[in-house]
Length: 410
Image (cartoon, rainbow, N blue to C red):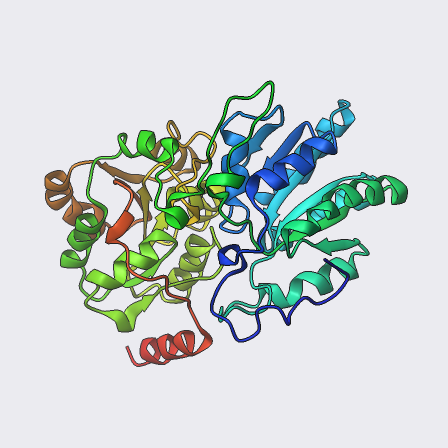
């Protein structure tokens, strides 16, 4: 355990993430520590670094209630309301989500909330990851004067209990940084409690090979094959700029024939559609497609109002609706089963809205959808990509520079 230390030496030069290491704490060890601290609610947006805790709570084998959200900025205000009502919540989010919710964090400080934050420490120790969020995490916490400890082993889970004491003493937030939560394993994953039945938790699908029940249920609501749907889009593409996001980042490069006009791997969830608006406004002479995810758009629904207000007539906003956060281990998100993006877009002022849940219908209807001269939303109801997806690709500075150079020549 390290308090207010960098923790960067542990994984230097390694491509492994901490949740793959044997010393990583398990989901049930984290949950046990939360129970011992008297936690009543965990307000969470799942990410790859804390998803096993999210999944363990969702099993219902603990009295702690899971409140899952669409955007990290919601977490602290919801927790503040729970605290005002006499409950004892914690918030859980990835470090990039912590950055996103800066104003909400200010709320916690200003209101002197003794709130504990569990923060997934993505980028801790480098791990061969080109993102920079790990480098900023601890400096930002120090700048906000929020004390923290790093849970870098199973034995350091006791930091959670200390965080509650520290938050109460200082009448303000305290943080626990989680570089990763390891798989429970056949021994550590079994909880023997007088009031709970035995339960084995082996982690999320993308990390353990076990598909969660939520993923199987949501998959049945989708219609089209993910890869074939994007292959259909590619077959109708000419010189359109394509900006892809999340799961589409791992599928579109497999079918794209114009990689020079692609922007793939934007390293911040929910912002691809906003990036696309900027590109479309900057180059009104070029058609722009954005391949968004339903989880990403749910995090940034306000972007539809912005798009409709500016109304870039050269923008086609595709939403690949697979009813889950597939990129973070097949997690459901709030209202995933019933959210109607077409209706929301119309309510924001979109005049051209299309929905496809059948490949033959997509093939017939896509030419009309992409040939209009007005802002357009196209909802593609698809199966999760699963094994069809290729490796994740990061958008690097050199890719942006190359894209700008290519675009300047046209």
